Image (cartoon, rainbow, N blue to C red; front, side, top):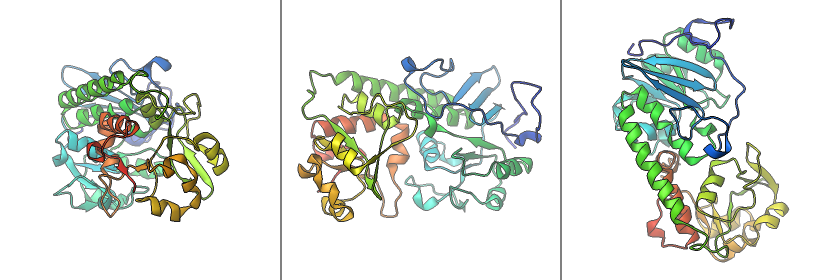
Length: 360
């Protein structure tokens, strides 16, 4: 096992009920982060992310993940990793560390070519413990959606497979999600490369955001709507959602920036029409064409953005089987997502878009 130390490292020695290295302690932490200027304290090693902290020593890197709480000291790179999420594949690909990927969940949904990864761990909502053990992993990169039975995770760890939670999805801003590449960098011995990648991503993102001002984009023409009508309910990003921050950084007009709900906002179709009937553009649509959207629900045709043909989905880099690079490269490179939103607001040519695809 190349993970030399995975301790029972809890902050208080009085904590009870430990089960070897497999004990997971759930702290009641806020699920979504905010921009640094809007939140209390951010770990000193991070600029945006609040879900982890890295501490460098002379001979190792200490990785702390806060929900559930885990602390591990890494002295050697992990050589065989299993990934529950396609986002984790995106991080590894950006780090040129796919050689450390030995197994994945739902390989048919992985956009990035992962040659040599022959082991299918099953469904990402509940990986097969037997296949995880068969893969001979140094660690399983998990996702704490609450769907993966914690007793199962503890059983895997007791059998010698550490479970490491990569919870970038709990971060509320695009840059905070991208910063989780540093955790994957620490695990694979590529922390220096991860820091360099994130530095470049951050610089490009902030440069783009600063370049867009109210004098460049007047309020007219830059109001935005998002989401779809699903069985009578329209779910839109709250002000703490990373998409809302993306809209804000693109200087888009969006009515829910001040909404503090941690989850998406459910609207009736009537409420959605109230807020977005005259929105200039619509992003994240569920169809592949305007006709398909109309077939899904005639109410989609009632919006100004539909009538003017300014509707976009996030499927430009999507395969027929559903694998979508938006969920791999997009998380690692939010500057490209931001550039898409800016270009959409400018009504730029389709050819310059990275992930967004205009519907016709």
